[in-house]
Length: 338
Image 1 (cartoon, rainbow, N blue to C red):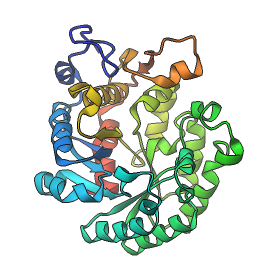
Image 2: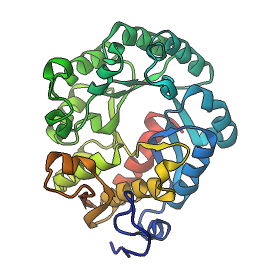
Image 3: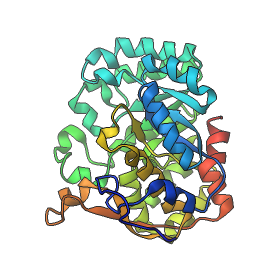
Image 4: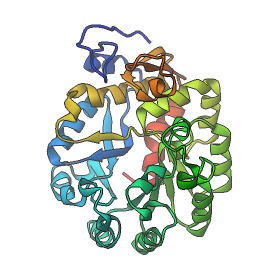
């Protein structure tokens, strides 16, 4: 795939100076896509997201939208947005948002027809509130409510390997990476009749063998590819092994970006969203081999000799059309619905 760099101003979402709107027309895949993992916060931000998404063929999304924003977004975008029940992250540090208020929110989301509930259980959640482990009493009650409402479960269970070498050095508090999966597997069995979507390649894109074991042991488990900087950095390292993994698990993996659309777009304008669409699509559908346009802070954290604006390498795996159709659209449609 050919790119035309250095025609636009540089920023942290565009270190190559790409004209993303033009580059979108150069990507080979032409059929609609479903973005299985976004966070649309407010109707204005949703408008901006869909404006840029339209350049890249995104038809609809599954969004982790705060409850108060759901009615306005639903009114304007209809079935282009499927909502995932989440706590009020506008007030992230208020413990009630993850206990009593959260229980009420699940019921309110269910009344609005929401079909999936998110259980965010990243290790850093323990810095915010003790209920943010996957098996806390609060979470167990929340799962019961979501189960009674016939919701699917989404989970964020772990973070990059690199984080366990710096942010999570205190293993007595956070556990090691393998520890994160013990409770997940127990709950996958406990709720074996529930569809589970493990975000960010189940938190372990670094180890496809481990992911294969999880998928083999738990037929109710599905993965999404969201978290752009992390995914392009780690998945690109696997080369043809990633191709084989996706083929072997056709119907179990769906495409997602983890775009957080909110007012201001972090001062990066269209580039913030467009960079994620372009990088994630380039990884799967092209043979592009070169620098990502997105600054990846983990690179310089792990190796302080690297420039702070370092970017990962994208190694495109150029999937065949039938596999792309499943990854980009059909798996999400079949497993999650419109």
